[in-house]
Amino acid sequence: MANETINFRYYNWGPLLYSCRVSDDRCAQVLDLCLKAKELYTHELAGHLTREYKLPALKVSNILRPYFRSYVQCGEETQLLRQLPFLEMKSAWVNFMEAGDFNPPHNHSDTLSFVFFLKVPDELKKEHKEFLGTSIGPGGIEFRIALAPAGSQGEGVYSIDNNQFFPKEGDLFIFPSHLEHWVYPFKSKVTRISVSGNLGKMLNQNVKK
Image 1 (cartoon, rainbow, N blue to C red):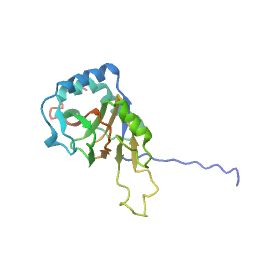
Image 2: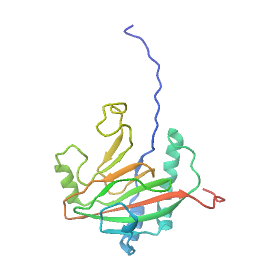
Image 3: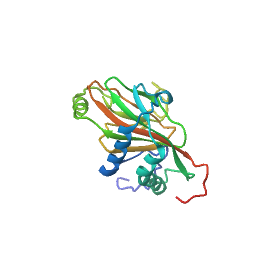
Image 4: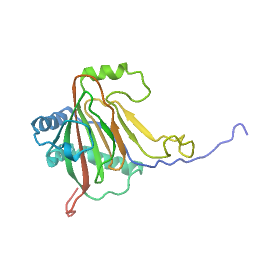
């Protein structure tokens, strides 16, 4: 009995949360778009930020296209993603996040969403390193799925229901739009720059990938 062999399987399921590092050249291209953005987009968003501006979705899509293809490939290889329709970027915006700003728990519209971090100041990195609490801390981003009601001692309480990160410059997260997520505020008198957007079903699907 002590040497008994147990053959088992386990199954991944739930939303496919993907991350990668974007090349310096592509980061610079997107940052250039951000610094030229003038049209306020705050009225369309859940965040408590003053400076959120609309970006040209097609230009952002063209720059980041290889990473969205990689997301789909990852989903196919891991069998964590159902077959997607042809997608196009429906919206994109830049967040200039400052001290006291925050994004409350929310999800997005359409099919896929992304968050792309372009500038993470050293002062914020220091604040995060010195944080003593139990959450991811200042400037962190958290993703969560609902496995059990808050405070419940029932089913799901021992399952992993969240992932949290302190993002670095160049980090790109891609995920299904329904996945709830939020960003923690920070106190440092700096500006962190990130880009978000949504991809949805392409109306004219008679095109090649």
